[in-house]
Amino acid sequence: DIQDNKVEEQIRRRLPMMLFSKVVIFAEGRTEENALHRFFERRFGYPPEYLDVSFIRVEGSKNYKPFLKMAREFNLDWFIFSDGEKDTIETVTTQLNSVFSDEKSFNWNEVMSRVFFIPNHMNYEHFIVAECYDSVYESLLDFFGEDTFRKMLMNQKNEDLKEKLAGMMNNFKGKPGATITVVDAICDNNTVPPLIIKLLDKIEGRIGHEDFRKSEKDC
Image (cartoon, rainbow, N blue to C red; front, side):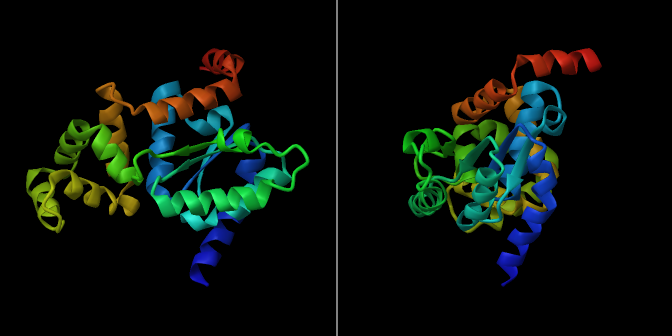
């Protein structure tokens, strides 16, 4: 199976990074991975690897289980940033229960405190457009140029402009530059969604202020 091979390759490629990380954040796909990586850089001023933090895509909402099993086996500190559609929530929670429910110290509330589901049953693209519409629109207009941007919008079948923008962003898997441009605009405009701020706050609590002082000293 092609998808299984992609997951196995991703685990094999990322395992060394996971093992040497203080915190690992799992996300569904490439867009979320790139976006969260950039949000981290803009928040802390350093690439996540510099502070022993890893953002790892699992290649689809059905593929968290092998990554979570690895996190459990090696006692890694982990979080999940997930799309919030109803079926995705069910899929993710089923995998969490499968991996952790047999632990003697199993605490469902503690497990779920590590999971950040996007609200209102949205995926990442719809979430970012809903929360940061102006930043998304203006940054993509600048990134692609007016002619290309208009053509890309016209190619989206939905009549609603926000739906068109979300549809455009859903095609950014091979365009990390566009994803990063959107994140930079959001940060420049101080409109980072509260859910992402909450995740970054949690990460900061795990890596500690001592690491920031050490990083500043090394610069």
